[in-house]
Image (cartoon, rainbow, N blue to C red; front, top):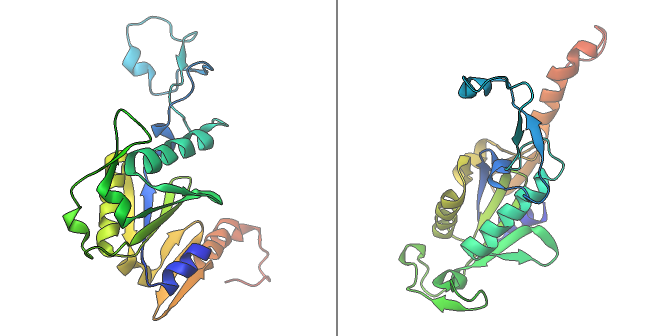
Length: 219
């Protein structure tokens, strides 16, 4: 909420990104193997291999349902933001990352992690020498992006698409009709930004209305 308030106050450009099958990008620690029975639907790929009832599969990816899956995915997302894109993790919140326009003109050396080399300025970012900034906050597979300029916003999206498959990206022009994020809908109404839970309430009502008696109030 604080980041949304600041972004709206400073007139930043907002977007919401949804990463497809996020947990599967992270690899498990091979020193602590996990095995499962062959799931239904996979046995057809092993036809002719004999009796598979006693066979097991080793889990090498952070599949949904494992206790460590959220942690492994967050480590993978952090690695992409910090090591690959060059962002900085916020000192007070490990789920918030930011990058300044001036940082983009430098790349980490492949032979020395503490060495950064200046590259040619990114021409598509515009704004001359002005040092603009972009923030992103992650929650599992959803990310809220707040960029000072649309050029910086597009640059970040392009870099994210190199690292992950985005199921959906909702940009600011769509926020006028309401963008779902963490159970809320972010709605832009003139010079005001509103967080609505109406959609969540309606969903809960539809799921549980069969428990209501006829004389109870209906939405």
